[in-house]
Length: 323
Image 1 (cartoon, rainbow, N blue to C red):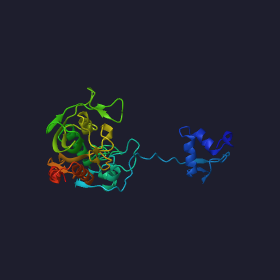
Image 2: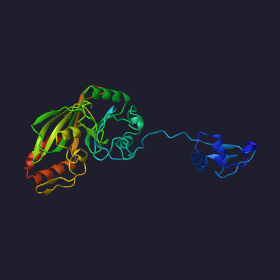
Image 3: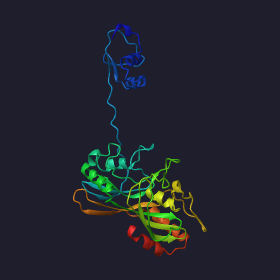
Image 4: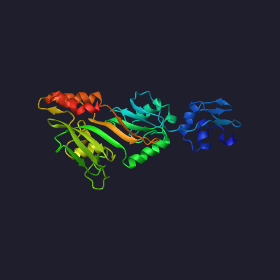
């Protein structure tokens, strides 16, 4: 301790000696007992004296990552290379946009024994994540458990060798029984949380669809994605004037009403990733994994059927292969 420093408060003395550390950081380390004067922890108000030896322990910054959480997961398929999860609606895939906990990644870390059980290519915030589903969308999601599997899945998605089939309930009467929507998808410049199909400079996107069931002013469709743009199905059907039921961001009403009265409250998008097909990253064998339609969607469709006086057998027939 130099003579000219004698009498300074401990925190001020350290601030002068360690300009890379803020005074707030130094005060925090002092409160944690990490600042010693002649081997004894002192308060930040301690006045240093000539001849004293001051040591400070600065722990390394925490490694960025996600904390594992015991969130239930439905695993549809699993081996040493990959897993397919039936993602529930209401959970986001990885941290972001202010959501740091309760994510699918946190559940995966708990289920598969931490980072060692998942691909690390996506980094500590997205271990195992190859593709995503929106928070309000449920269904089949592929997870890479090794880096080699991750790289192979990236190639399959890039080359459009992954088959993705969705079930969606739409407002309105879609024209025809089958069709293709081939509209570019881009960020909406006025509302940044939305995408739009009205900008020519958007990224190419293609959705093939076929009608499964018509109920008054609702249409149940099966849709195959040939591209994987953000909100693609939601944007494409909204562009046709037939938004996905529950999707208020893209034009669906907050409360569904029929001539007979309001339908039950529904707080998610009626959109489910029902099937995903891909080549196994190690063996090359073609796999097709199905995710059963969630009970909340089945119940809501039954309520629509009852309100529109549809024969229950029609609904059962339309859903048979998705249950």
